[in-house]
Length: 298
Ligand code: BEZ
Ligand code: FE
Image 1 (cartoon, rainbow, N blue to C red):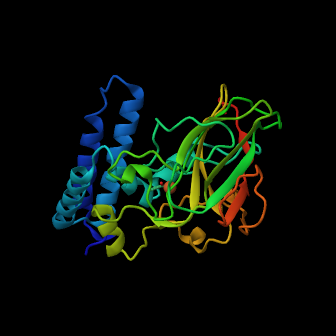
Image 2 (image 1 turned 135 degrees about the horizontal axis):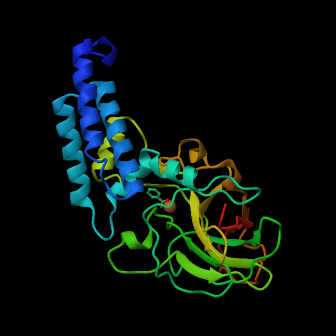
């Protein structure tokens, strides 16, 4: 394969002239931002094509791959989010848009399994709603970066069951292992969830085939999702991860951040639970996650 460095000056000039022509075709776009984004997209796309000297066969495979992503995508399955995630693009967008601020909790990837109609629960509720898994007591506070409690913060939580599936991956419209709750007057929150377990991102489609072709695993490190919103605060989309999980080093979507790794303490069945709940002889775990929200305008 010819490297771009090896092509003749005349060939290089032809390729560059095409880029110029295409970039200029966007120059009358009335929206400045759209013009900037489209022109940059063209420059980077052409740079990629030239860099690897992409063959026509490879370009046709890329089109076929994207077409397959479209065909498998529906209300429940979003192959393009998976693609963005496994390419690290989702985490790069998170990084660009959530600059570290003081001691604010770090953000991570959103993923495709959020449901905006999660059941509303009181603090202390069991959000498993029958989903399989070991009960896990999760508690913490929501504060601003000065340590002031934030009462009434909206906290959305969601997670996979111990079989590795989110409720929306089942075809029976169940709502399980997800909920919406609000921090109390002291900024505190607490609920019973499930001890997070590792699971693969859906790999029965084109993204899974691509991962297999490049020798990458679809497994995600065990985690519990949070989205936290409060007036005048930057919305936080994040997860907490389980300290000791062997997948922390090779999460399929690059979502792990050191500050988000938490101790999930294992408890014997005969140990008293924080709220006196009788777990019928089951072991359980507990984790603490104190959430710090950045101001909205940083
Ligand atoms: C998730 O954590 O739910 C997820 C994130 C990225 C891709 C697939 C699933
Ligand atoms: Fe997840």
